[in-house]
Length: 233
Image (tube, rainbow, N blue to C red; front, side):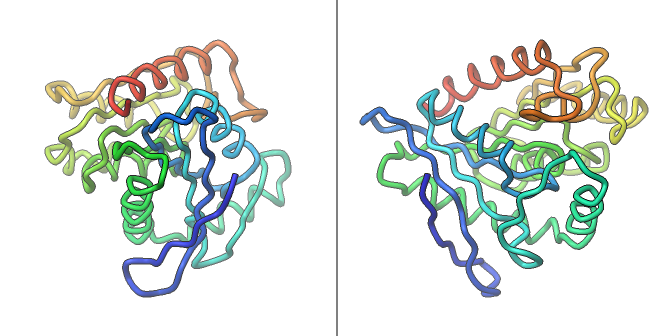
């Protein structure tokens, strides 16, 4: 893993993005990994390492840099949860999307990249991945248990690239009524595939997470890998 520095589009400064490269010498597609409310933490880094092992370039920008650079929290303590929610509440999602656009453009130009690049996000990052699907030229976008997706439906007409949604049936942050609103809005959208994983809670695919569910995670990750390989290689 190495770090790159990127200049924010709004001129507010520069931020760090962490890069993991595959061992292969062949050109590879890039995946911009979008953090949860816990920052670019150990769980996200493990996901990045796994993507690199699959032959992708993984790039994870530090989206909380305007508040507190270098956040690395877990879901294991009340204090960390409080800090994470405070950071989320202080986070400007529109500026976050602009930072992700800068990261996406930089990822396409990395020495080992073939020019193809997509996004993959979790929780807050899952919402931002959907916003990248509606607001950027990303080649593919994958959202794991994104929050508040039902209030993005007005933007769905802008989607022009494959978008995959992984939804936890028992998601405490995305209740059934909101899921139904989302699915109704997506019914005729040929770009979007949505999968609901029965009986699991939010963050079912978070590495070493409290609600990790091995079966659902393996199924979801397999679908993700297949899509990324199809679009980015």
